[in-house]
Image (cartoon, rainbow, N blue to C red; front, side):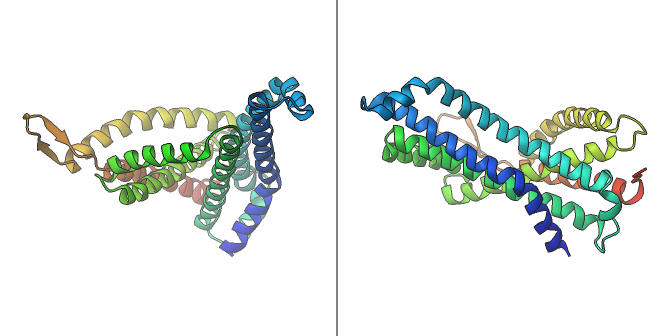
Length: 269
């Protein structure tokens, strides 16, 4: 049944996000043509793109910004409307647990966010390919990524890449559960439930910011290794485990809050 929930969510979100992602790629193509035409020939096509270059730049900016906004709004809407709104009467009569409902929301949102990242990456490559030196760009990207991943993985770029993927994945999941927990708390208000969710989100964000910095610093001191250099200075080896553990803690807390409120305190009246 969990698979069916995920399929349903994928289709529901895909009807809106798939066309937007295609529009993002198309806007990237138009922007790349504008840049390319301004650098090359004086053909009729180049003149057309040069004439409307400002419009294409604005279009690209609007589509890029709009894509991020739509993803955020849709993630909230699908959770709120599907589980806390009128659709909740139907959803909670299905032979699935509250945990399965949450997992389906998390998995679906994660997949569409990842697809959005891929669409943005494709758009970026189109712009570079048609208006710049792709080989030079890829080489610079490889060099910078190797340096970043090598730092995270302590001179092992492969390990660093895996750590970064884990950190990004947990960061997205924790952020999603942050949103879900906030609106589940806001739903406890008899009136102005959406406002309650927004205020709860802000309050949780402030508390998380205050706690996470201290937790990460404490864990970093416990996990990191220090050694002396030849000139007697301390060198601290970066360890990604503290950040991962802190995100796991926040994810678990948000998940527990959301599950308890949906399981024990949900009022759809």
